[in-house]
Length: 364
Image 1 (tube, rainbow, N blue to C red):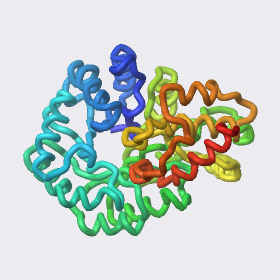
Image 2: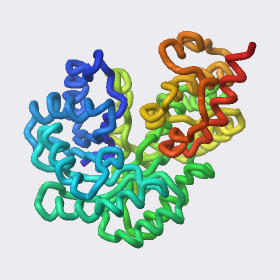
Image 3: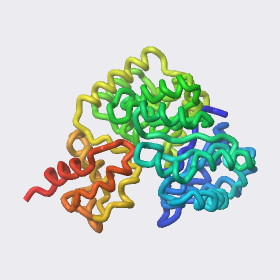
């Protein structure tokens, strides 16, 4: 199994459905390059990610041709009795009889008690014993101390999915380096999510681009993805591709992966310092915050607009604030209920940040 996986959270949509023709073509190219790992969850694209994988992957290729990961998401069950029916429905939606990896999804201090009450970890092991799952793990967004506690309480897990990229290695919110080191100490393999931080490490400031351009080759994404894949305990790096161009670029360096050279590592460190010197809302556009917002605020959209117009002055944002909020709540409509912050994997102070966005765009 190659070290490169297809993350299916940001697939291109065609109305309410995934663009099946495009997704099928991307799957064909991905498998033809010898890459076979796919990652999904029920909460991705309102359930359409699983459906698309069933139609475009499982219905078109023999089961042994690919590895598929799905997740037990806390949003999808309230009691222990609801976990098994939900899991069986995940299998049906994906059109498979087993998952290669089943992850307890987005474990953190807000969700762990829920997973414990619902016996999510224990039931995942039961599914494995029944042959419906090959490997069990969890995805994680919290502190290294909390990660260590979870691993002590659940030594049976085999893998941990972590957010790991060159910008977040020593970030106080994400703490990628320390979390990776905890996994190493406990002998757990690591699957990497967000290696380009929701596209942030592709849309670089001019000074960062110049550093990578001086190397004489390689896309900006290539340095971020290869950085994550260069860690010895990492077995898989996911990329949330949604265009043929993104896929072809990713495959050009991950189908035959080579770790970063010392010169490239130095360049990555320089770009890290450049980005860290700029004010920026570190949103990855996962959209977990959007569904529960009572005001209908498209939070990631507003944060992306703010970042581009504040920090990337040489680029005009492709939409105006008025267009971004049309049909949705404005930043200033936030009632500070805090639901968004409870679901944010990046632990962003969203309520405060929305005030900043409102002050920037909603001046009277």
